[in-house]
Amino acid sequence: MEHSIVTKANVSISDAGEIEGVAWLFDQPDSVGDMIDAESIRFAKSVPMVLEHDEGSVVGVWPHINVEGVFLKAKGNLFVDGIAPARKAREEVKAKKVTGLSVKFRPEKAEPNEHGGRTFRGVTVTEISLCRSPVHPGARITVVKAKGSDMDKNEQGAAPEIAALETKVSDLTEQVKSFKAPDLTKIEERIAKMEQKANRPEVKGDDQPSEESKAFATYLRMGDQMPDEEKKALTVADDSGAGYLAPREMSGEFLRDLVEFSPIRALASVRTTSAPSVSYPKRTGITNAKWKGENQKQEASEPSFGQVEIVVREINTYVDISDQLLEDSATAEAEVRLALSEDFGKKEGLAFVKGTGVLDPEGLMSNADVPYSFTGNAATLGTNPADLLIDVYYAVPAAYRARGTWLMNGKTLAAARKWKDGTTGVYLWQPSYQVGQPEMLLGRPVIEVPDMDDVGSAAEPILFGDIATAFRIIDRLNLAIKVNPYSRADDGITRIHAKRRVGSAVVQPAAIRKVRCATS
Image 1: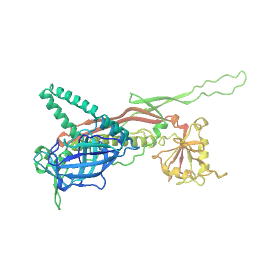
Image 2: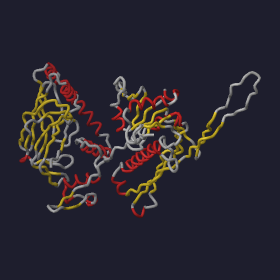
Image 3: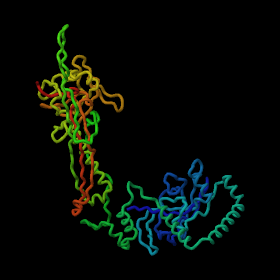
Image 4: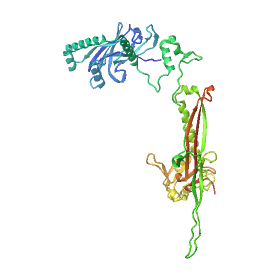
């Protein structure tokens, strides 16, 4: 298994020049106890020079990398001309912000060593970076050369002044150190080590590493010498071939099927209530005026009234889920809530179309007062469905027709797209040329409702009319979810309860009309 380790040190850089320095000391451990076996070190075919291990900021190459005694020495060239990151790096080196080298390599083997870290063998160096905070204190830039640039000539002329300034800074630093308390020095050392460790590249992924993954990484570094408390975090198992020690990972992604919802709620009139039912007064008849001659006596008449009551219905269920699943997956409870929302939404949409009004809400297609047109055939839409649709369209009163919408499912829609006018042969279906706008049939929008009937014997596959006027939806309680971790705690189960209270009914049957597959 490949394993990338990065060691960092401060570095300097110059424009259009050369950089030469010590990238590693083989006879000393770095600040976290790691060492590299010099005899087994190798180098990639091309070793890039990058800034702060940012692979997007390649500033040069290292054509000369050699092992000389206990030193790993590197000599490289900067891409100065036209390369903004290289120029920036040189300026930071000159300002002594970047003063070190950092080696990135891939080992074949890692063994615990006496310094509390690891000794890497079979190492392949893949990158040497210019950086600020070193892991190995001995990795330093020793030479920064410019290739004949005016800037470097000026630097040589200014060498005495720079040397004097550096002497003053050094003296000032020693004076400041004399004022430091011992406790403060220890704190600074600890912070420096923490910064060095933080400079190691992070493993990118969707989630932060789990406790098990961290323990597994410790096992790879220390083997059986790892602390007992970290061993407990690992899953130990075996198969027929050999044993293995590895953590189990719980994916953060859930697999789910597509759920289609009825769009009736978006078409109907919706209101909320705090009562168990809502009554709508309804005028069932008008006055009875009569034509009379001169001096004929008037006759009394009065309109008739009734009411439509919409009862709020309840749908509910509960879900049992293991505590272990809730603990192992950060999204398990959210997925249960999503599943409940999808289930309730689908059941509600079906009730708005075909609900009987007994335990569930009354649906559009279930009201006995909604008028209908026959297809002339017991199992199909007849010999000329285009003429049938025209009849249905004009059977709806003009006031409702102007706000009408066609409802049908996907199979019926597939057939409707092929219907033509019997006289002109022009397709009745009008495609939408604007994003977000519905298709049109006889100049009115067509909405796909998955819960509508397929074309078949005694089926009612099509409905047309003013849905907002005809249909009312009453919301009493939105989807309410309560988590109960106590009733089945002995079994390690959490119970999640969900319920929804909603009612619906057809309040103006004359505003809509449906198509029934029948002869008469």
